[in-house]
Image (cartoon, rainbow, N blue to C red; front, side, top):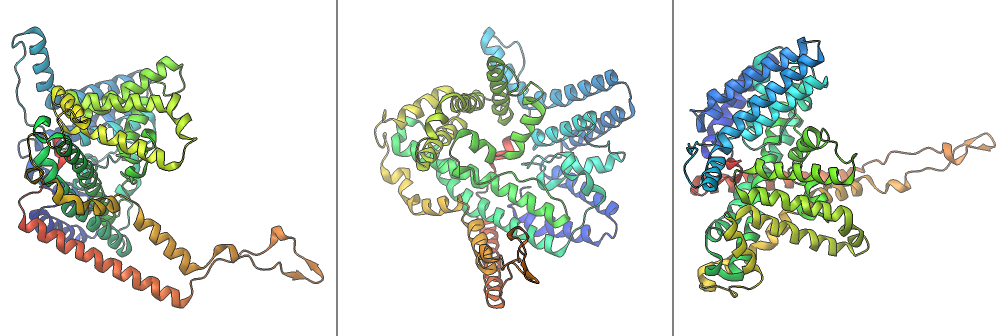
Length: 507
């Protein structure tokens, strides 16, 4: 079950919200959320729901045991055992086939059987969340959850279960027992859900139609135009697909009174590789920073060790996304670029106009998505060659066959959707409604014949004028009407179309 499906939009979510808010007590709501989350997972993975329950049980047991053990040595042993079990399960289901294939190829015979296991949906996300809980209990940053059902609710919570954001237990620890669902918060969450749904259905699926038609093909068949169009379409598809899902997850969290962390911050406006990864999949970057990079020593080590730490983190980031060589290459690609920027490139870019940095970063993530989207090292090499004209403009195809031309008119829409114009307009409108804050300082009042020193002058809070307030209200109403239209169009598209892929299911 995906968020952009008729079953979820018109059955699962309405029924869940109705049952959830009927419950008068927060404890009952927690149980409702757990039950519906397990049903949500079982809908797509009935075979593996037991794996989810097992993960909940053993992580609760280890966390509770660590909290009750006073000896630091025993705590370390329990933590090591928990990490080993989590990583063993993740590695078995996600990487067994990849390792078996490559070992067999290296020795020239079938030494290890490839089990061809189906990847449990969301296993990378709920495993990392479970790890953050146990590690933070060990560090003393959170209290161990005494109620296993509540920890189960945290690990299995359906809004962020299959695609994130990666929510740490510390992010919602207080809200598990003491959260407040308000009408304003519900409305804000509903708006964000509509934005995310529009990103996914109207933008990501549209770009994905072109990407999916070109990426599986040979570079020699489609030439420069086909390869460039395929990667460009994928660049927009993966952003709108993943950020749209994150927006929907965060929005549903707000409906229930949870504040999930932000996962995307307009990454395509970045000026460097480092900035890009501070804006893209922010919760994953935060996980590797706090639970891998810093424990390795971070940047408080000598340069050779710093380089090694960086490459370890980016190698793991690549492999986390999938069991294939192109993902590892993609992660190492970003690690090398970030190191080059730190030691050399940023010294040059800082002296150049800002648009040069934007172009630099656009080239980086464009070729990065080529590594990410094209499978097979041989195919990747051919696609790189095609980008530099090795197979001509069109390869063996015609412009009509490639269909790239029919998407040109949509490019401005994709670009606008990737830019932070909405927050900028909202900020400008609010500033206009409040007037110029720099004119808010009134003349220093008099006390008898003595003027109050300027440092004691009164600073008036800008007041919203009635006329401007009405305009702001009208604009907000129009914005809500526009979001309603986005929801209706998205729902119509979901009902009428069978094309509804979700990229991050494979991770």
